[in-house]
Image (cartoon, rainbow, N blue to C red; front, top):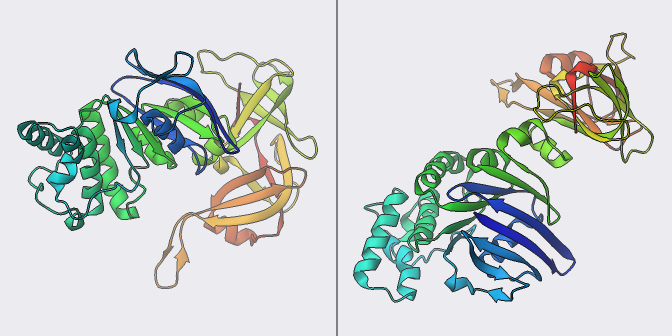
Length: 380
């Protein structure tokens, strides 16, 4: 088990978090730029030292502020793959992978064996004499991983491993990298800001914001139970946070939203199928998610039975598909973001292009939005 507790200041940035990672699995640190993801990797690697904290892997301590244990970076059995790979363009693949081994003054036979094994693990066997400049972006990434694996690390640190690739190459390399990580069975901490990559690679996912973990769990947890607007946006859901002010027959509840200019109430269905589900008490904090496809738009106040009706201004219209044909006809769905009149929280509806055209929607236009209480899901 990898056990981590970090508390440190970097200028005005305060990083304070703790987590555990299962041996042989990949733990993903997910968050926006500036959340502290790469800082965590540098602290783990020993390139930075926290003011207070603890880092241990399988009961071996590499940092402990109370015990005054600080193992230097070169003595930690950790492999680090940087975002830009840091390959030496004047060296061939073999020498790039062997670089760290030569620094350890290992016998030539050991170096050849380890380099050969590492290249096989990343499916680059036979390319050892090629220069780094003769490789594709995906191949360069695998050379960087092979260089880390040749050191036989107990912990692999990957900092945005796909970020340096173009969009098409990134798609091709994702599954290959996932296969490599599954086969090597090394405890891995991977940093990304891409939700799809977190889903593909993460046995466990930690969501960072401003140096703190704001949510952690499995892919299922993040998908169904987002606990921040950041995560909800990643999974494509409307998200509200508030306090329960009324329960109705243990199936519906009314939640007054927090941090709004004026009180806003949302009625939602209570979660039923979670093992730990319970009816939230009045005054208890709760979360609500609403699928944008469950929201209906109107020009006038609707006469429907929907319990949640809001008015607001359209602030963005985003077409989700690309134009088709010579006439650049849009054939798909449209996301309409609405700034509610009494709220700072935008509401996003997803409708068909035909509906948007029929309603003549445009930015700046006032619109009514509604959704049924049974289409909103509340949980604590």
